[in-house]
Image 1 (cartoon, helix red, strand yellow):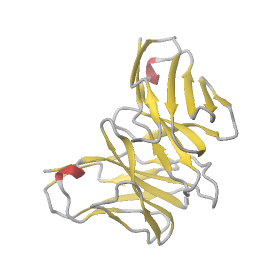
Image 2 (cartoon, one colour):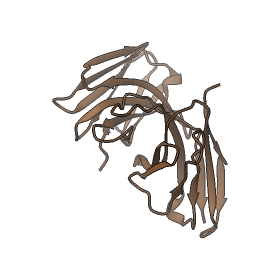
Image 3 (cartoon, chains in turn blue, red):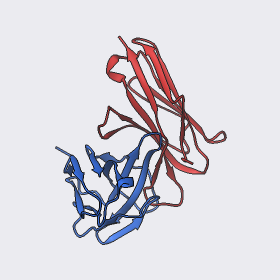
Image 4 (cartoon, chains in turn green, red):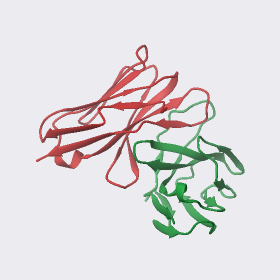
Length: 116
Length: 112
């Protein structure tokens, strides 16, 4: 089954304790992206990657890191989480063809993070 | 502010009625997409309309795009209780790879 998986689905942590949220897709997609969703703000892009070893900042990258060592995986790293990073996080993937943005994105089930 | 802004923020209708949601955006786009999100879950792609298209259908969904007004609408006909969800428009921007900018969404409640 074609899917995007995220782990963990729920996480409660404390300020400053490093954490990683994993994301994996089995559709051989080039493009992967992380979003956070906060009430009234919709989804905001944190980081994205157009292929292995190619990553770039989205609209709200502060406090986050990513890596793309393999095509299928795109982990999100919070080196020193703070309470303002409490949010619902989504990973997404899609095909990507240079110069075209006609591709739907497939979303993971979400990770609900609480930072105390 | 968000590139895409949905209107209304919330909509409550009876089963069988039609639901119309609108989306306005600010900059030139490659395409506009609509997604559905059931409470707290991942988004599911509904339909994509390219900037050179004016109308598209998929089952009970009808999407229109007016690039001169920078607006789109999503019509769900003969709504069902299972259509209860949040609906988001997302604009694909001209100058980025596959960047989508999402609006804040419309919460649709279909009462049975």
